[in-house]
Image 1: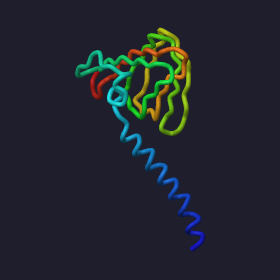
Image 2: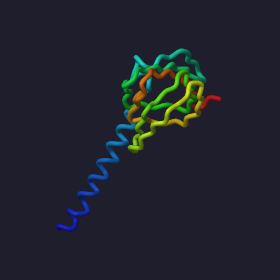
Image 3: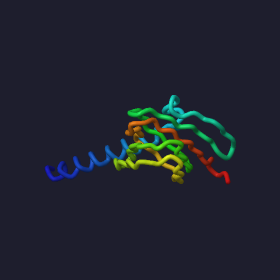
Image 4: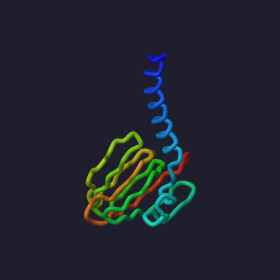
Length: 129
């Protein structure tokens, strides 16, 4: 009986962690709903959505998801992004930099720079070309 408890507790902890991560990812919001003061929709049609993202130093955005998208950095930015698996990405970006981004969920997103961050985001709608 004692051995069973030894294997059951780690399994229960792992199951709980996976379940919490899956629930958090499932509850991920649209970024505009998650942070309406930082994300503003500029254009939306059946193919794309163009979103203006602007944040001040220290501002954070909670859990949110994006479809495939292009980000165009209007200003230099230093943003820390925490992924659902716990990985932390913090890469300084230059003004004028353009990036392709696969769809995904962020656990958090924070402007860690000394200046404001301004990004133009073009999200692709699913199934549209």
